[in-house]
Amino acid sequence: GQQVMQIPQYQHVQEGEDFTTYCNSSTTLSNIQWYKQRPGGHPVFLIQLVKSGEVKKQKRLTFQFGEAKKNSSLHITATQTTDVGTYFCAGPFRDSNYQLIWGAGTKLIIKP
Amino acid sequence: DTAVSQTPKYLVTQMGNDKSIKCEQNLGHDTMYWYKQDSKKFLKIMFSYNNKELIINETVPNRFSPKSPDKAHLNLHINSLELGDSAVYFCASSLLARSSYNEQFFGPGTRLTVL
Image (cartoon, rainbow over all chains, first blue to last red; front, side):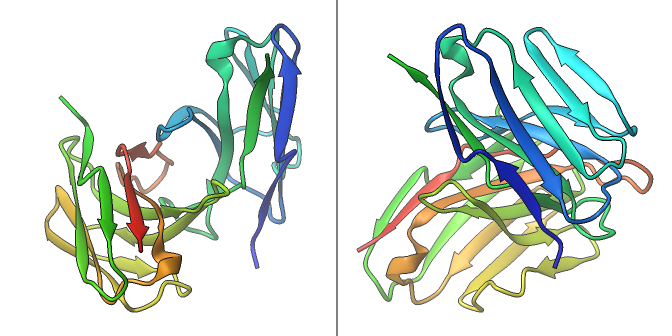
């Protein structure tokens, strides 16, 4: 069945280091969304990528959508404590225009 | 003005009981969802519902049932609660569009603990 795999499950970084999470789909996706969930909070939408090879930036966050539209990444430059949380990717489930299939999330942990 | 609200925030109950979680959205969205998030943070879709269609994830036990009195509300009723039902349940909503894909807005979650 359709799968969206996300790695790593956890990443421990020192504050100021970079962070990257990768998302790989078993099928071609028409778009991919990224969400952030703070500890104890709920998922919050960050961005949506639609075009093959698309790159979008939000301050220190860079999002990429692969040329084949089967993979995506989120890179955070110079992490800050406010970046702590779990980052999820999600893509359309089968041909649905509203159901999403979710990656397992990558938890960003800042080392004390 | 909370966009997606859920009640209660916490729910502690005994095995075998029946309980409901309520969800309301004031965004005018067409579609609402229920998700279950387990202790490992994996988000599992349970139901998707819009005015015309209810889609049930086939892995969801029939003890779980969504009830929608109107477009702005989607409640979750759970019968005969089991220990494995302990999780955080999120309600979400989105605007249904035929030709584009829209972000989902999540409620704050309901932490269900079954003893």
